[in-house]
Image (cartoon, rainbow, N blue to C red; front, side):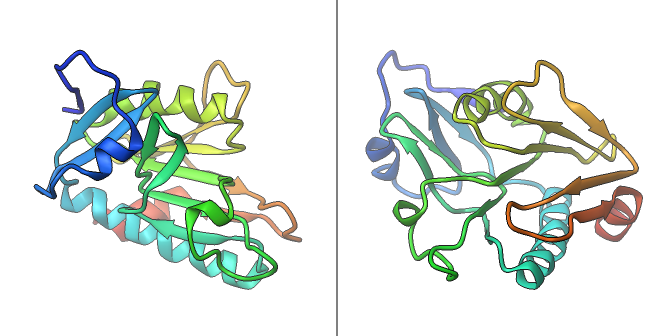
Length: 187
């Protein structure tokens, strides 16, 4: 389970980066440290399938760059997260070299694990909404659906058949048939 650290102190991105690698994932949101174990194989299979689909779309539309965890996203000095997948804009038509080149998220995707549900559905969602991330998807592998959140949403849009996303500057939207996605990734 994604557990907040028990010590009563404010964590920073710099402090998280100083933690020795022990195969856990450390993230800090608004100064609160969260520790989660490595994701499951099913989780990884869904991440890979989504990465293939989104990467193809982005290369055809030339509007963004996909990153796959582990990649640090520092929203401020008290928030360092590792989304499973995220899209950032290109810089002068090219892939950005480092987070500091863009500091903007176009799409963030988290694939739920039993250990990350609270962190992904509440803590990180609220943070992404507060930062104005245009699209935040929570992929529920067990239910085979995606919850789509936008900055002002009080409830998610639930997609079980298809989800569509249009990157700023793209002429056509990305359409993902969810039954096909989950069948390829999980069956």
